[in-house]
Length: 177
Image (cartoon, rainbow, N blue to C red; front, side, top):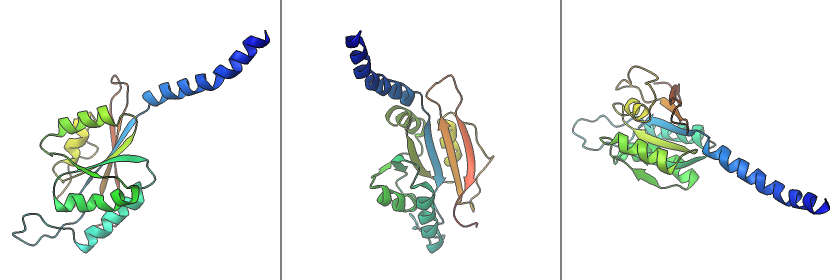
């Protein structure tokens, strides 16, 4: 009887570890999706940088998300999106991974496969953030994002159980426009 009790005492931590692993597999993936911050609107600029207000918004994004356990940051290959992601990337010591905004289903598949159960940030454009939520399986949380709206922060929750629907919530961050 004593041997059985000793065996159970030894196996208890292992059972706890196994239980936590199975719970992790059932956890949700959280994808934060934002549009780049305010950009320079000087006519003729091919790849405009952020304005001073945009740089402040990028810092506000960092402040909003630095405690969200983000493990990956994705950005399109433009100065304004990369610069929006940069303060958080530096804070978390993460590389900014580029993605093609014309291939959102591929990005969604990659996030589901490589970052299941974790949190990531995706920085895009006014005409791609709602489409990103849709590519992840969530309905649009707002009908549109206007050209002058830079403060939407979409939180898309993707359950690990594919029988459950993804959801998206639209919040605001930083200064109001």
